[in-house]
Length: 125
Picture 1: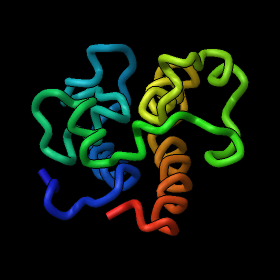
Picture 2 (picture 1 turned 90 degrees about the vertical axis):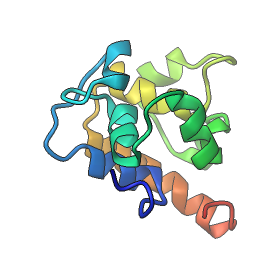
Picture 3 (picture 1 turned 120 degrees about the horizontal axis):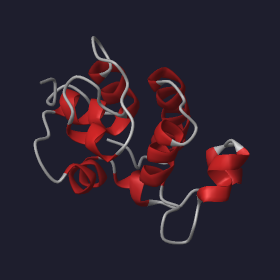
């Protein structure tokens, strides 16, 4: 859709949220009518398959593990759900959507705060 002009995940979430209802659960990743926030990014970026891998290629910081001192506070129920195998920032986005039921704007705001850290370190294109 807008894939050539979008350079940040927070922007992709916001653009992809226009005119759709937020969805939850595994099917929402590929839903065009009720996508989760990562599905919203998929729509905005025109991704048709391998969504998680494609997002991690476009936004490498999604592979990083969540660190409170670096990435800000999260609700306790989200922190309780983080494990060594599911503590990436990509997993946190999923948990904020599905477990905490945060709105796309709330999640995009949190993602944007992380992106600012990467811009300062010249790690975000």
